[in-house]
Image 1 (cartoon, rainbow, N blue to C red):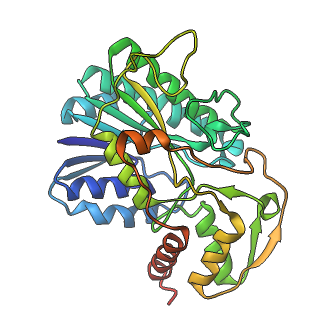
Image 2 (cartoon, one colour; image 1 turned 90 degrees about the vertical axis):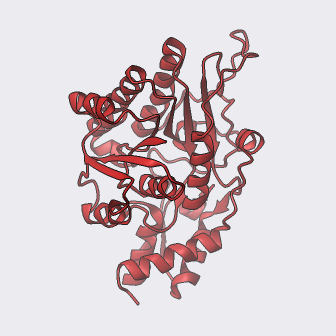
Length: 336
């Protein structure tokens, strides 16, 4: 089938595109190729799929209303995976309007395109950051998430609400996936693993916030892609047992669902750094700093719904995933 993948030159979008192409789908990939980080990395990711006969790439911004409408009219995708967004919790404090343009205005254009062109299923990236001030672990999609701690998190929560309105009003099946700390080869340079790796190889200080006491549900890229594909293939159903008197935050009478997608095995930040030190064969000099604004101390995904409904079983231990990243990092940057 024809699948539209937004953010197709990004970390997750490129990996999803390659997986769809490998199984025989036609992929229409779009990306605005902005300079939030070095665009050369996007170009390098994109080179892996550009030569495929079933891949078409368009350089377009989600906030371009007429361009997005024309895209849907021309290519008529059956299903859509929306992975384009302005990312980064801390950057939202510096440039909040970038998040409004991409994550809210852009997402509205995705919803309109799906509505007017008979799209069978929209799968979109949400984030573990929506849990915000919640402290009950593991985080569950059935819990209320009305206290975001960053604008990035607020836009992701807003996406879930916007999607619900389209599912309710127009019968559009939509599924939101709350990603938990995705890592692996080809990840972004603003993410912790690349920052740590560069500091280690340059002999610089690795900054560990919350005094190194973070725990994260680190999820390897291949496990994320597996979950995305499984969910994409089964359009979100309504929940006939949903009750307005005791509303379930993860389902609806409309064809709308939200799932956590994580490893379900929280790892101490110090163990994560230790795995990277081992993989790179070097010891990091560490600085222990306070918790940053917008950050949460711990994340842990309850993925019971994804396991029960999709037989989702993340299979990559952190030690293996970090070792895979380290090999890619050394090769890509010619550090060997």
